[in-house]
Length: 119
Length: 110
Image (cartoon, rainbow over all chains, first blue to last red):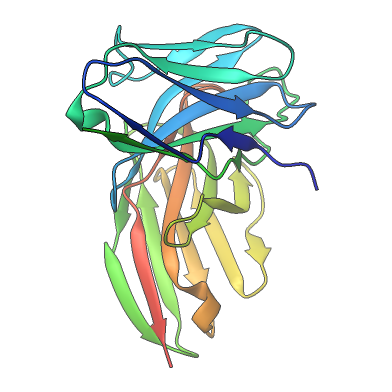
């Protein structure tokens, strides 16, 4: 069964450094998402992406974050200048919703996540 | 924006039943339910759509009350494998704003 893959599985970085988290969504999916989960806490929406542009973003997704789909397969999340509080598990998800975005009637398929540790 | 779930945590003995509730202050277009095991990604259980029927996944079922902006997940005759954190996911407005609920930790003991 096709799956969403994320790399790296664990990233350690120093405060102030830039990191890029990578995701390969399922190939025929149209909608892509990034979520963040601080250890033991809720799954927080960061951003959704459709038709090569950001559809929606949360208040967490400030100017230090950006997303890109640099080619036909990869979907990346960049954090420009990491802070200690950015330490979390970052999940990428994709969906094949074919309703033009009117209703999300297809499941989100999640990757296994990237654990980001900022020291 | 984020839906609120109750209870926050529940401990069951194998074979017991449980209900997890998900409530939103915003109008909902659909409700998803996911289960997350410790250290793993959330895994999809089911979707409920406006005007749709009650859904079922094995011995887990769910309902969606559009008027009350609520959904409930029913776990019947719980098994040890049901342990994990359950999240509802709700679509606010259309399509691309998809928020997860606050989560309910479920532990099933022998």
